[in-house]
Length: 234
Image (tube, rainbow, N blue to C red; front, side):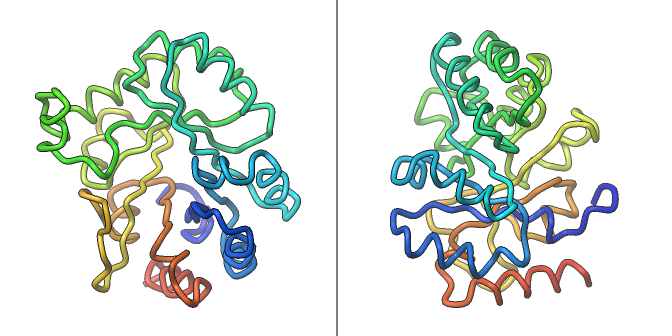
């Protein structure tokens, strides 16, 4: 763990819902414990920028996870608009290539923390092979991480499985956000292939972890967050 920031402040809750009532219940239950919410493509498509405003009006920050992946001109204009919303973090796919990443960094102008998505946690090596990528998962993550760094991207989204090695090659200045979090007790992996526990992610060097369904599908999201925070203090 870096600096004096508490573990709880490094937990990001993912809002991937189409029911506004459920979104409000999740935020009401979890807002005493966390400071950042991730708005993904589901919620952004359902509610648009007004959800960003609602979260910011609660004095919380937004991680806008739309994973931009297009030609450089299109991505640069999308990043420029997204950064104008005043979001804390913003994602784009590193597979878009160096020119796309550089265009995004130039359009962002240091406003949001740009995060390059390496290999989705729903992929493993077999999945990469099925789409024509012959690298092992960890080798592909490394390749894309270095590409993002060289293009001026602030940080990465990567599985906890590759995190120790990523820290060695990127250093402490790179912000690394880890999704695919599942709890220590038996918890369904759902469609994830490379999962890690909250403790495992932080011990490996994560700056932030993103937790979705283990919290948002719980009948008591606040209790789940308290339990996670207590386990991280031990």
